[in-house]
Image 1 (cartoon, rainbow, N blue to C red):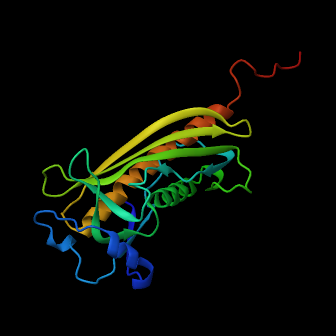
Image 2 (cartoon, helix red, strand yellow):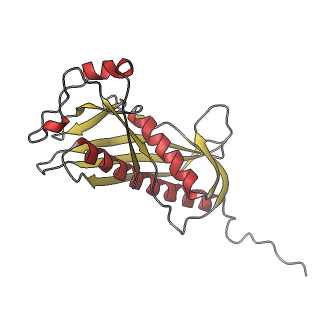
Image 3 (spheres, helix red, strand yellow):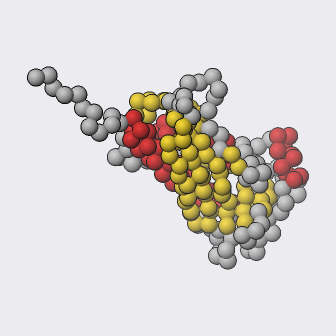
Length: 227
C-alpha cells in the first residue's frame, strides 16, 4: 500500500488554500470540517507497492511527463464528488503539490522500484530519452454515492512515445478504485494512496511490456549460421 505521510504545513504557505477551499458539508463527517483560522493539513503520497515478478527488463531511458489535467484537478486541494456533475474539495486538507505533480512523483518512484529499466526521470528538456510516457489525469477524487464512506476513483490515460521520432506506439487508459475504511480524512487519503498505487503499478507493467515488445528483434530476422 502507498505510504501515507501527514505533515503540518505553515500558515503562510497555505493561507490562500484555507481562504479559498469551501467547507465539505457532508452528513455525519464533522471531523472533515475546519476549525476557525486553522491552516490546511498537508498530505503526502509515496509509492510503496511491490512490482510484479514477471516484468521484463529493458535497457532504455524513460521520461515521465507531468500529466495534464483540467483546472478542477490541477490543484493542491483534495477533490470530492457528490454527483456526476459536481466537483468540490475537502476543507482543511491539501496535497503537497498539484495533483498531477503528485501522480508524476508516484509514477517515477514506482518505475524506479521495479529495477527493470535502465533509467527513469521526470520529463526535463535537457535529458535524452528513448521513450516518453505522456498522460492525462482524468479522475482523482473521492466519490460519495450514498455509502457511509467514499470510494476514490483514479483514472489516467497514457501514451507511450518513442523518441526521437516522437511516434506514439501504444495507448492505454488505466483506472483504479479504493473504498475508504471510514468517512474521515486519514482513511480517505489512504484510499487515495491505494488507488494511485494500483494505477502506477498497472502503468509500470504496461509500459515495460510495450517497450520490451518494441525493442525485440523482428521475427524471422535471426542471423543464419555460416555453412
